[in-house]
Length: 405
Ligand code: NAP
Ligand code: MG
Image 1 (cartoon, rainbow, N blue to C red):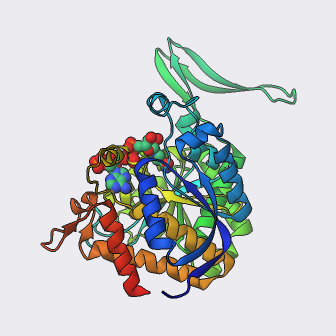
Image 2 (image 1 turned 90 degrees about the horizontal axis):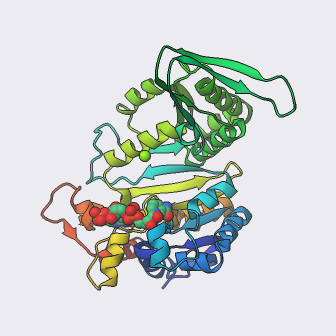
């Protein structure tokens, strides 16, 4: 066996729950530890351990990402009433992803994993389209009002420093109706913009940003202005040097164009637009198990994970001793994404090369027709296609990896 590749700086590893915890261990044991000499800063985010530590372990993990710069996270249960009972928890702890995101002030980017035997629903798409969704404001933190009768609706702003209140007329209602007030924060939009520029530069892909600024001349236009200013001040030269572009266009124009592009870009979207369009992109690409996710902080910290959850149903089958065919692709790409970033920051090309090779081995496994049940349903029908179980898939990737080393 050749010498193991050294990963210089500690990697922050966050273990998780259920089926993804099972796959996580298989990936480490079969695809990583035999080849890499890693110094791991390990945090066990298993729901029971979060409970035992009063969720302190989640905060510690986020702090470790701030210290070292790169974290890799398994999927975790966000407890609800059922989970509190199932695991006898002290309470329904907050979503770990929410806690980590709040501490890192990050934006989540979701990118599909493409293979040549699964065609996206849009024929033009050849490269991944990554979505960057702002995680604050819009309808998710709005104020709504059921207008009961004819009457005048006004907004009143009262400055905290004791200045004179400002009244803005909204509408003179002729009868019953409904109203909605959205807000956003300059600092939050700026962090979002910085995370998007950071991600696009890190991936060396164009950045599209779209709002409806022609109609929404303060709210949407405010987003556009903040992006434009931030770009001009801090990113224009870097983008030019990397040969990539920042491009703003109206959201309806962007939706029309996205259908004709070959992909390979980051599409930044406001909270609501991102909610809707990320589901469209995900579904057009086939499977949740083929979607990776990275949290990028405006401070340059990165946290990689799969976009899917803990695959609870498969885990219950696994516990009963039944065979499962769960897809570990997105979890594996969380590891390779984190390792590649670690290697780039540490300037250790061997680590970057290993991440590339492992991804190539995983992609070619599926392209050769060896796949889990979720993909078999989507892939081009071929007599040589073969469904494998959870472990069989990882073993097949290991064989492919061996051939490349
Ligand atoms: P899920 O884990 O995303 O799974 C939903 C369904 O999608 C599965 O039942 C399965 O469909 C399919 N699927 C997802 N990942 C797959 C994979 N790797 N391989 C094959 N099929 C896959 O969502 P959930 O079961 O509704 O949620 C379970 C737990 O995950 C919840 O407690 C939730 O809090 C948590 N969660 C965590 C995160 C995170 O940590 N980032 C995100 C979302 C949810 P079939 O059953 O049809 O095969
Ligand atoms: Mg949605």
